[in-house]
Image (cartoon, rainbow, N blue to C red; front, side, top):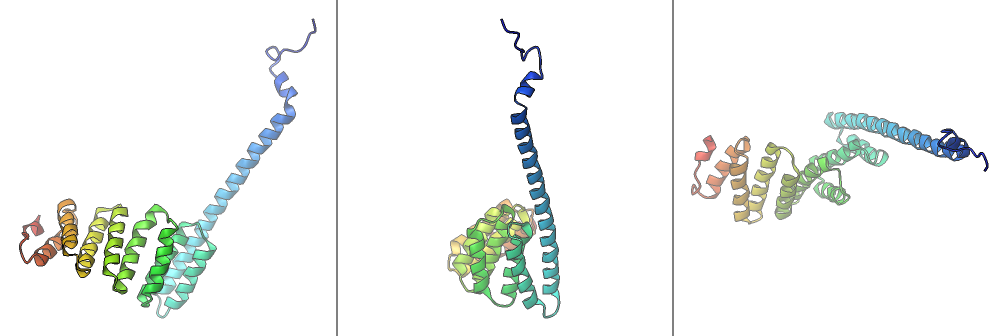
Length: 220
């Protein structure tokens, strides 16, 4: 009977028999780790550069006569740093700049495309809120109300939810949907009574119902 080496008697035998395969697999894993680390670090640097450029653009927008220059800077950030948080913030900031300049349709179109592309969750609510404001600038009250409602559903703070509901109520009223407007104000008073917007909602309810709904909630 041959005296072949048993792997149970010689733990290194398996490694020696498959040394080449082990080295290939080990090298591949190391390579994947290095590539992953490089990509991660590159993304971190990209985010940092984009955030820095965004801050510069915002400062430019706030300077006298800087809106036009800031718009160009923001557009460059959106194109150059696609995939970063700063690039998504730049879309929202550019929409604000355009609305300040009276370019509501341009802002609305860009925001619609941004929302359709599926922004990160934290940018969805403000995007809908800005789109609603652009719709208001265009006199599209019904669309504005629906976008305020979308912003309400996506917001994560009670004060923001209440603010969007108050805006939705106002634009529903302008769109001729009186009952929907009342519904949103009642929701603020009922579910967001601890926010400052509850007082405003209560007062508006009294005004819109000609005093039929009690104003006592204003002190609660």
